[in-house]
Image (cartoon, rainbow, N blue to C red; front, top):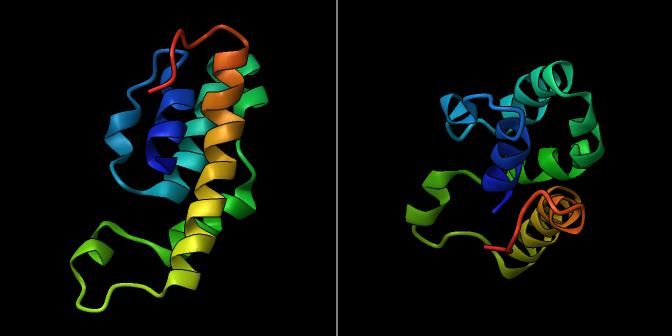
Length: 103
C-alpha cells in the first residue's frame, strides 16, 4: 500500500518510479524530490516522512516469509503508518481529481 502510494506521487509527473523497487526511503526521498522539481505541485501529496520511516524500518517484503512473522502490535503500527501515507498521497490525489477511482 505505501509503496504504491509513493510510486503514484512520483509517477504523476511522468517519472519512472518503478526503478526504485521496494526502497521506500529512496522513493520518499530521491523520487519525490525529483518529482517536485519536475512538477512542484507534487509537494502537496508528499507523505509524512516519519510514517515512511516507521514502515521502512519495521517491514520488508521478506517479512512475509519469516517464521513467526511480526507481532500484532507491530503489524498494527505499520498498518497505521501505511494508512497515513496512503491518505496523504492517494486520498488527497483522489480528492483533487487526479485519480478517478480508488484502487
